[in-house]
Image (cartoon, rainbow, N blue to C red; front, side, top):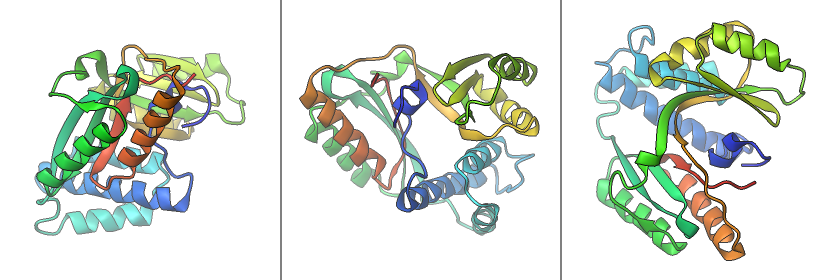
Length: 245
């Protein structure tokens, strides 16, 4: 969540600390279970596009191959993923910041109560489905690492277009590539084969515009709200349009 990159502004923290890494891997594993279940039990990403998307996300998050294999082996067992359902919540944070919370839960009453509490505690409010999602676009997003600033922007842009990407933004320490959700797996695979390493690779809800906050109390409450949501075991992703620049 650091730097001036829009990607960093809307992404949850991944892998910076061991505890965060473990939590991220647990959430990715949950996604794999559900992807295998919804894919008719297939653990072959060539025949299960949703699973392919989750595996790409896992690799970008530096989830070890052995971990991925163990999760897939478990997912192949009868009943894996049966307990979980995906539920999305929408609402507003301090200052009218639009927030989308994607959850995966085995107890919708617990999750709904917790999400409502997170919104209420820090000056936000839980809304109805569709209240903010209209202002986001669902896109495939691949963030190419350029921390050492050695990659040439023109070369990367040519490769992105060659790999099927729709757009690219040059940001601090990275290049953010956008594509249609249906093209995500092919674009990410092609970029990986060209030797690029990713900071993140997943399907995201990308804001059409960003909301700035100037009030220090609102900024503090927004940070606390995001932290508590991201630490919630039922929360898979938190998307928002807060511009921290």
